[in-house]
Image (cartoon, rainbow, N blue to C red; front, side):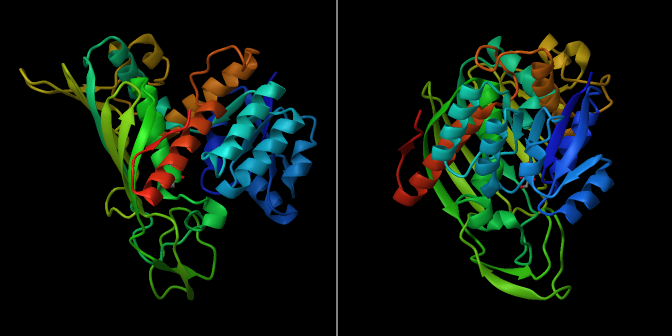
Length: 385
Ligand code: SOE
């Protein structure tokens, strides 16, 4: 018997959710809700989804649907996640979980009170190499971690004619680069090291204070060149890039940079851990490689290989060594963890989840809030626990 899911919103990320759940074999994409009936019908037909609803409230009334994925723009996450929880259906939300940690605290509380299974899509921790690295750290292979540094760099917002709903605080929220991609960096690093970020000192920058928005809507990652359309000037109030100093709960120091204006860097989430015995470096654009740094001998590169991995990491890898896996496979792992939890009837209040839950989504919102407050005040700010 398959689990039937419904999806709300189908921009860039919605189809990736559908693709990943279909690869599980026991989840059916049964319904889609859009902002109006015509669009919903068209998109549902393109994605091969049988039912289409012109509003998410109609989808939530469908008794056949057990799980709902919220793939809408950020400003709708809170309202829709709340409605999903109140409908009694399980919920998988895109990140950020909400626009502020006040909202995410309420969502976490509600999800717990209603006993629904909840997840937020921090998919980068789902790479097999991240599970391998996490196990290596637990086995003390790197020794004590002294320094954690890295970056998440993209270039899809490099030009002044690059525009998307994520740039407007009304749709994307008060933070852009930090909430959109810095949140992934923090989740991945905290997952791998097992260390919480407790304090931040941030410097945010909007390098392009005015952008030229094409009069037609522009999709995430769409490329447009000047002269192709009519434009209007839009003042920009969200950050294109940021540098953040961080302190972890055990006193470990770190720093990360985020940028959506770094030419040539497409989706480069990377970090380096400097341990007392060894270092390790990973870059999402080449996810099958882990660089291991030594002082007394030649450095090594570990290539993803199920036969060399610990069981938790082996379970996340779907093909033999050399048949490289990537982003869609990490998405599949995210979905598999979430749907196995539901299929096995696990209790979200008691059973441990290896996928990111609303608790992780809330932690992430607390970090974003602290980063914004630090930038505004020009000083260290503690992340509220
Ligand atoms: C755009 O910056 C984006 O699609 C993010 O919204 C995703 O969360 C990230 O995985 C890739 O980049």
